Length: 341
Image (tube, rainbow, N blue to C red; front, side, top):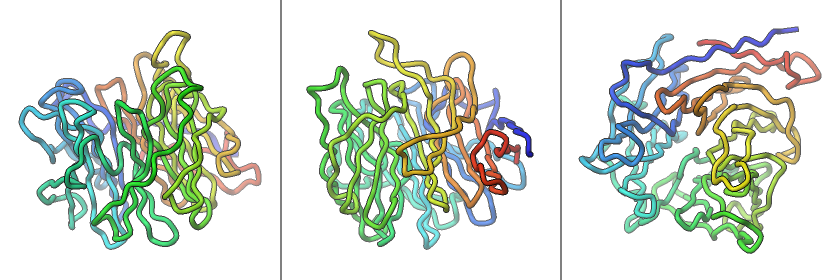
């Protein structure tokens, strides 16, 4: 029986060229390199907040590189996505307030070494289009689906592209019964496809629980969002579908206290579902302690999971999980191995 070995790896340490950082995203590149992006500056919403990247090459992280910046304009929530033809996209938001967000996009043909000039993802956008926090997915028919939301309305939708991300069509807003809630609503979905055309989302909410909605027409329309049994602290989550159809979810399993808007952003855990998200098993602790371990991003490569997250707003942490599928009781505690690359 294998043991659990969990080793946290920081992409940078106290010599970082910014005081605060948050909202990481990652992509695995050909050959096994890992590219990570995040926003960093004096503090969230400050005019010096820019988009930074680092790459893990031959066992080491490169120093942070600023790749997107506009003077006195806050930058937010980068999302990386690599198209099948090798084009790498970096989406991010700009704006002095969330309500005024415009989604920008840059492209790279050399896996993030150089980038094109940023342009709006959708002309005339105000409020944010395309991926708001989590990665797009490609459906069985080739449709690109980007999980989206807008604030201060706290509504969720997806953006659909039928030409590989060149143009985008907004889905209908996910229906939500606001008469039955106390807070603002749902944002920042993470999505997966269970069968051709059947797409699902889990979302952050103000209601103490992760919410879910389902689509049977490739994301064009969605059922009314409904609460799951998974707790949510009004903070970001992320999910990836594995090759065997199982789901891996990273989140903070906490709720706000009565009268509070947000719950603790600790601990950070990983859980799995074998039944398309109906039930979740075998919680694996990733991090815990004072302050926050939050806003995770997760991707998969076969039996390997790669996770990044915010560590106390001071660093971006990285973990790699190797799944042991040699036993019938897959996902029981001792079948996880977390290693330092």
